[in-house]
Image 1 (spheres, helix red, strand yellow):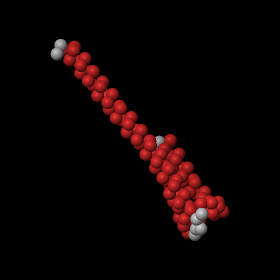
Image 2 (cartoon, one colour):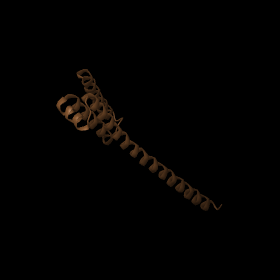
Image 3 (cartoon, one colour):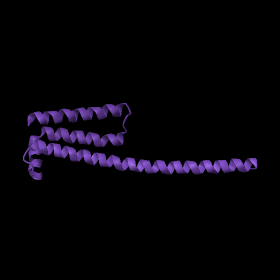
Image 4 (cartoon, helix red, strand yellow):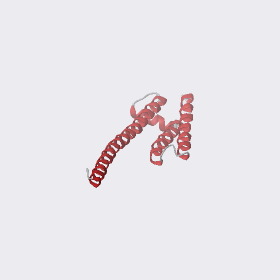
Length: 119
C-alpha cells in the first residue's frame, strides 16, 4: 500500500511542478492552471493522509484505501476534463461567431468599395 501511495505522491508533485513551470513559461493561462493545481494538491493530501484516505474509503464502501484514491483521482480528472470541454465548446462557438462577423464586414467593405468605384 505504501509503495502505491508513494507513487501517487510523486506523480502529484510532478503534476504540480509541470503546471507551475508551464505557467511560468506562459504555456498555460492562470485560470486553467488552478484546476490542475487543485487536483495535484488533492492527490498529494490524500496520498499522505492515510487516516483521511481510510475514512473516505469506508465512506464510499471500498475496502482497499489506495483503490479509493485511484477512484477519487479518476473522478477529479474527469471533472477537470469536463470543465475544459465546456470551455473549448464555448471557444469554438465564439470562433464561429467571430468568423461570421468578419465575413459580414468584408462583404460590407467590398460593397462600399464597389459603390465608390461606380460598379
